Amino acid sequence: MDFSIASILTLDGLTNGAIYALLGMGIVLVFTVTRVIFIPQGEFVAYGALTLAIFQTGKVPGTVWLLIILAAVAALMELVTTWRHRGGNAAAAAPALKAALKTFVIPAVICAVSAWAGPRNLPLAVQGLLTICIVTAFGPLVYRVAYQSLAGSSSLVLLIVSVGVHFAMTGLGLLFFGAEGFRNPSFWDVRFALGPLNLSGQTIIIFGAAAALIVLLWLFFERSLYGKALRATAVNRLGARLMGISTQNAGQLTFAMAGLIGALSGLLIGPTTTIFYDSGFLIGLKGFVAGVIAGLSSYPGALLGALAVGIIESFGSFWASAFKEVIVFTIILPVLLWRSLASGGSDEEH
Image (cartoon, rainbow, N blue to C red):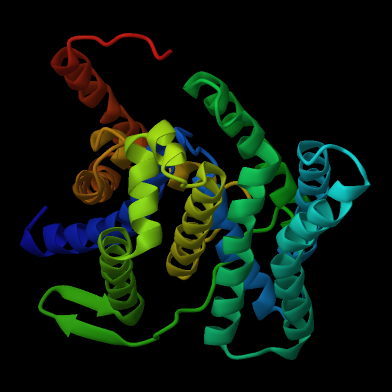
């Protein structure tokens, strides 16, 4: 170990940490607004990377067909729920049909455009944009199908649902993508020599995209009406509902943002490592470790925790590559112990 090796490992750790930071903030966002510990956040990463990889082969990604199926299921659930809520009579048919179409139309348009664009080998940037649209559209549909009807349940029930959604998305990933791994092309294939460091264009894009998204999230929550509504929902769900804020819309918007963060993370990490249908689990867990370091409540804490996770992972792979995952996940133990001692215990949730 010398200065040049330490510099290379630090750069590699910060690069991975920037991606973990996005995932950590996505997990914190979902938990604060909906109380869902969103384990499938990593599956959005894998779906994003693999969707772009299939676009690169000149085929229509399997996520297009999965999205239209999920949209149809969500639309049917919305139709039945609205019809019953409106009284279950003939007068309720029109509002119920309108609600179902509202759920189905946007994913259907995205699927139609993606199915048209798949065989045409469009530029990489266009394929990346389509990938972001596809994976982002999964977020509200996953919330509608799996979580919305259980929004008032305990955190334990929501965690069990998250585990089920994770296994379902992993199995569907195997079905629609296969067991083969893919590595995507870099969005900027240049290299810059900075002393002992060899800085790639993809690394610059990762840092730039992560910083831009963090700033946009800050502006969204501080300056926009929707962002303030989400903050109100995170502080007090009942109070937000009494003030006319729809917790269902807040949940769907939150999951859409989680899908966007996952899709962007998949595009960023795809050129740096080979992604398989189940790769998202480990990647998402590292983001979860960053979120736990932040107490699942602080966005700056998630950012700092993710950078620490990335650096520890990088140096751990140098000194004990066979145990680098163990080293990373062991970090969570002293953090949980410290938080348990610092909190002094708390009452059970009622």
